Length: 83
Image 1 (tube, helix red, strand yellow):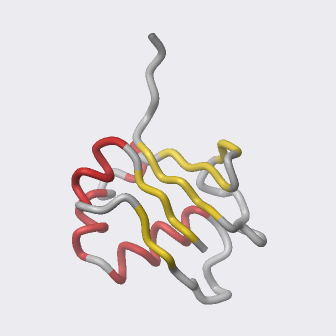
Image 2: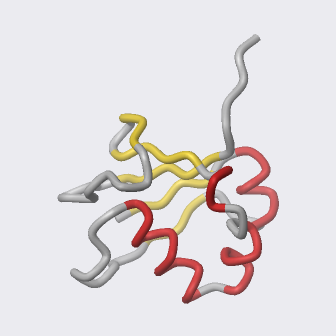
């Protein structure tokens, strides 16, 4: 699974993506964010306020309870503004 990072999340992590193979116990976006935070102190710091993290699975916006299913790509990003 490819994880894409955008905006200040990418800047704080110092990278724009990761390739990961989460265990079967990682079933939702919330599980994935927690699993990534457990593996990477920088990620844990960057995502400390999980309410600020938005997500998309295979280009579809989802909430943190969304199941990962057979996702190929997960994007994580801060809230978007219009303009």
